[in-house]
Amino acid sequence: MDVFPPESSTKTVSDINGRLDRLPRGSLGFGPFIVLGLAFFFAYYDITIIGVTLPNLITKFHLNGSQIAIPVSANLIGYMVGSYVLGSLADVWGRRRSLQVTLLVLGLGGILTALSWNLGSLSLFRFITGLGIGAVISLASTIMTELSPSKLRGRNVQYQMIWGGIGLAGAPFAAIPLLQLGSYGWRVAFGVAALAIVLAFFCRDPWLPESPRWLVLHGQPEEAARILTAMENRITHRLNGPLPEVPVVPPETSSSTFPTAALFRSPYLGRTLFVFFWWGIAYVMLYGYLAYEPYLLGKMGLSPAHGLLYTALGDTGIPIGAALVLLVVERVQRRAIIMTLWALYVISFIILATSFNGFTVFLGAFLVSLSILANGVSYTYTTEIFPTRARASAISIGDGLGHIGGVIAPFVVLTVLAMSGARGVFWIFAILSLVDFLMMAILGLRHTTGEHLTKLAS
Image (cartoon, rainbow, N blue to C red; front, side, top):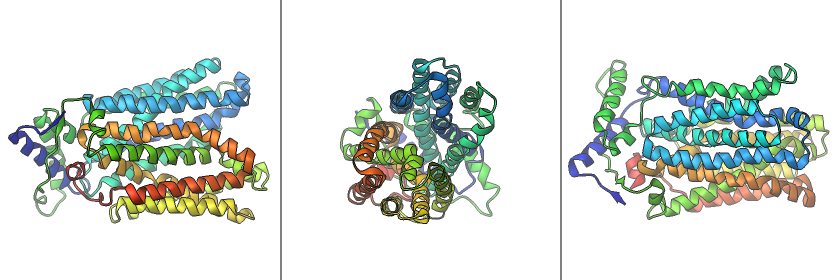
């Protein structure tokens, strides 16, 4: 049951949210950016490292074609379970405590994977690692959204995506010298994720405050006010004048039921179903492309070596796209940016499907990669259209359970590849991207950029 708190408490909830939303850039300090950025780094590193070490794992455990998919699928299933279970608990336990637990799970999964002795143990330990990966990404996005003033949410979350991009692109470079260490090099590469355990100890003051928005809804207004006062004091000495007036923002309800229940009632049922299917379709395309990119490009008449070369060249667009979106993320509506990115996906895959030489293959791959981490804006959009009482649960349903698309992706790619070749796969990716474009255009909430979270949740 969702209820408004007593009148005095309602005013306190509104005041806390208003005080946070008026803060200028710099009020957070560096702590949250470092802790949450590194959380994204370790999560994306662990997503990537399985692919980098796969040749070593195949040799070590004598895996055949069908067995290769087992640890990868186990990791994705763990991602879905961890994102939902730990994400939902964060709406009850608190953001910071839940992030500590998920970082410990992520680090433990890395250690256990490094100790794997056969296919069964490898798959089990990748499942455990997946529990941490999914929850870390969901919670880090939620925490940064709630700690950010209304006019800085998108920018702050996008900074995290750049850290994630470093993990995504840096894992292969980090693994190259580690894999030269001999038969145990792949174990060291997985063991790097154990550093996430160290990061868990920084999920406390003064590095990472709890969300004042969550605290005030859970009967801790004094602690919420203390954190906000510290943020205000941090920034006032840098300003030439006083802080802006506290804006009047709508109150927000609390909940006496499990958070997910609120998501399947009006007005959130439609939004919940939308983000689940939108993310699910996106992950069929994204995981299908990223997992098979070198192979698909190699099937476009290029040699395997050239396929890998064009993959590497095309992926140079990943950090460029992540940086470019920072220029517009607080100036343009989130929905318009997302639609633009999905239109770019459609165009990119059509270029690949109709490519006739190396340049057009590179161009298509480069344009695809531009959108991959620019899509951090979708994390911001997903978190901001749901209420504080169920925000972590909502993104865990969208991004987390939406990873069912990643589980389906290999079956889609391999089936279409057998029937229509690589060009057919790229046409399917173009169609899926068009579907997501149309879903956002028709069903997406139009105005979210710069709006108060409590207004968007009303």
